[in-house]
Length: 395
Image (spheres, one colour):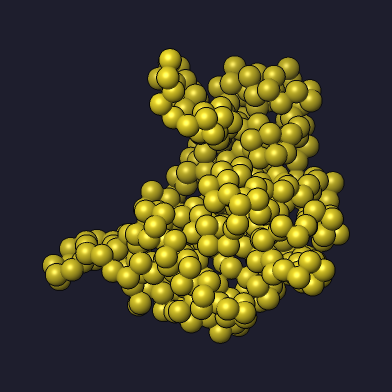
């Protein structure tokens, strides 16, 4: 039979997101066994509702009868939205970010793609700290690049090692993607860590005569626990590009709204931003959603109720503790990344499914020997999963 899709896509489909595979398996299990019997910890899809101020803003703007509400605007986004985002970032970081440094995007995924398209030549490399969100592989490949993982470990609470990063960087390295708070580990990289990484990027840039961007992927930046402070990448890296979304911080995952902000300290930042705006258009995003730009401009500094996530983190960690799992308590985001029992993560995943627990094996994040639980689910579902986890561990 003559194939319809290209060979690369055929291969990509075979190694497609483990997260989505498990979510789809969950849909089938809910149909067969009943939704109330399935404990689905596979997908980072916030069960929380947006803050009241966000819902009010959506209603107000949707009801606005002013002409032009739903028309195109500049590919970079509305000037007032970019200004509000820039003001918030400047206030948080102490770096003079202006509206001209900001591009509104179709979520953080859209933002990462326009950055990588703007900077990568065929064969270029993007360093990432493993475990990591495996879609980064596809995003880099979309634009001729490839991801180079730099391993971290549970023994060091998944803290990145600047020396390991330096060993991984070559003359083809164009960027380092940092994700803190991290998906899937929940680790938060402190300020000292980020400054060490910046020093490594500067030394390698001088060594190879290149400039390496620090791309900070920050959808979880407002979700941190126990008084942990999430440092500002703009303040810690000279060549910082912040990519973020409101999917998690405002529980607007389905609205696909985010931004890219390039540090004014980057030499040639104007050319970079022009490139980002062009890539926003030619990748087919055209512009970020018009209604949502208005909503986030009203709520740039808002966030979901952290008590909501803290309650769920504490509940799942208590169950894992009782069942005897080995894990690092997450400092941020809404994931925990325990070690599998028995060593074989595929067999462990299948045993979990037999107990109606849906997890994502660590290999789906370049972290074999572990599994990810997403605890942004109903608190009652977490509590009811206790007996299933205890039975799974007892096996």
